[in-house]
Amino acid sequence: MPDSRRLGRIITALCLLIGVTADAGTLNAHRIAGGEYVAVSELAQFYGLGRNLSGSTERAEYRTPFGQLSFQTNSREIQMNGCEHWLNFPVFAARGQLWISSVDVLKDIDPVLREGRSKTSTLIRNIVIDPGHGGADRGTRGSSSVEKEMTLDVAKRLERALEASGINAILTRTSDRTLSLEDRVDFAGGRHADLFVSVHFNSGGSADGIETYCLPPSGAGSTANPEDGRSDGSSPGNRYDERNVWLAHCVQRSLVRSTSANDRGVRRARFYVLRYASSPAILIEAGFLTNRSEERRILNSEYRETLAKAIADGIITYKKSVE
Image (cartoon, rainbow, N blue to C red):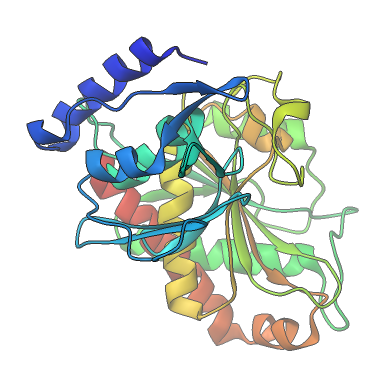
């Protein structure tokens, strides 16, 4: 992790990029409990988020036209600009205030509050859409549905929605055929994909809602670890860390707003198709087929059209911001 001086230089540069006023000063990291952390109060001041509205020492809540953030001590779940995010490390209380990992500041919070803006623009020409499973791999099953069929249907609708907006979209499969994970990654690389979007549906008893995954950064682990990410943190991230989380945010926020589904958040995992993607990449779990009520919604063609259009809208938001 960067030391306090290095983090200060990095975020001072970001200050010029995102237009934070000079009064905000430099955001410094502090060595606490064996890691580098930033005080939540200093973070809020740096980004111009105003005062803590929670009235609690265990929570922090900020709401301005520029950004909305809420934190809870001992939790990795935060609310940020319209949807839930899972941090790589829990927020914790010490020295009379809340602290957040410098990794999360740089790799989660800054890309979202900066809304994907950078000094260099990136053209989005080819988007590879990956309908999960297929052929011998059926994926999860609901009482009346099979994942491989639902993913292909939504992917085709997403392809049409993107093409209608003048964006070239390419499917890894257009029929019910078996594709290995390696095949999917190689396909995207061979088509010079500028974005990779994998579409899935979830399983988990009566659980419900939508979640969008991107790759954890180096030094952090998957959301599945209930404590923090250190156990699998030795695996590398990739050079698209900031773009990954911004793309995931745009799509998750659009899906939640359009469907009113339970917001399960932007999450982190080292799925093969994310780890080896040659472009910014996300994996969407667009609902639980094992939940009877949610399955009924997914079986409705109008709802699947809503899902596809919401994903397309999120991609278009991302595209406009980076170009």
